[in-house]
Amino acid sequence: MTITFINCDGGGFAALLDVSDGTTIGQLFDRQLPGRRAEDYLIRVDRLPSTREQVLTPGCRVSITPTKIAGAKIAGVRLVAA
Image (cartoon, rainbow, N blue to C red):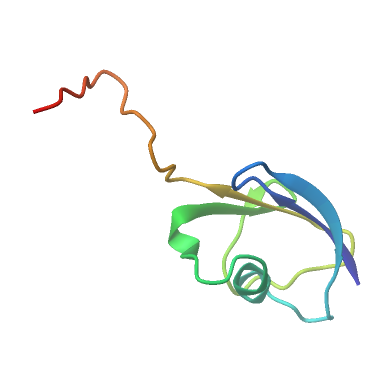
């Protein structure tokens, strides 16, 4: 079956992916972002938050967006070199 996969990690891209029937969000995440922690991402299916156990359906839209960005500055905090 074909799904739309939107990876917002880094430069970001959207692509049509072929996945097997019965594929879960957890399996897709592990395949597309090996070595990463799902807890560090907002994972949505058809614009709704998802669980690892959710089974993908034909034509669904999956987006994976990081919630922690290395080098991001905390609002209102000024860093001073020692």
